[in-house]
Image (cartoon, rainbow, N blue to C red; front, side, top):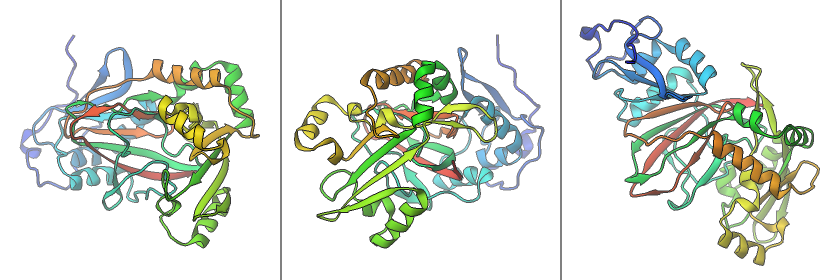
Length: 347
């Protein structure tokens, strides 16, 4: 069955690439709305029915419609629109959020591309980055996150996504209850010689500013020899979405835990460091260890619920960061995905 096109497009008004004024149209005219995959509601694919339609222009006239579908589906994939530049990507993002967020207290290496647009996580291309909701290892996080494909990899490099509501529902109720009660305790050791130095993570070289940030965020900290820093923070494992009222699995226990590392790297680190000295690790909130079989169960549910699609240059993926987690597949060849975040929420 063919997919219907909603709305009758006025071609005379939409071919100009220089048009900036929002076109006031009915909520979903000028675009085809359909699931990317028939068997999955995530992501919802939105594509224009005419050439040269600016993504930011169309979105400005359909913001409420897009916001409602974002809450329903968790992720929207915009494909085929005119969105070929960082400037156009930023204009689209600012339709929803005028104030973008800086990547402070980050977990992974990124570079600032332009303004508050950053590269996606710069991990080695041959490594898989596990599923996570952005900054779910903290008590404050962005509600929205966008990905823009500037250059697709020659092979691989997908950004798999998974509905955090389904992860919550798919886990054993006993596991959910245990995590909800105990929460999660994240431990990080910042060192100039291993992983990220604290100056990069906190975006300052002043210890007093780091201490002030930690006090405000409820992070315990300890300065170490050699300009090192150790922090602990107990955070949520399960969260309730402030708009939908739905419970979501919202933590990075399976990612922070040392067992998430490749076997060879894990063996090297454990041979050199005690667990308290590892660059990062995680326990239950009371300090007790998280069982290996529990972590594997969590990873299994993520794998089973995940959806992946090949990037196409110009694609924009918009996620509700609480409703949908994301990952990164290994890749070959040059790849450039940039990221923007907005709407800080204090949990």
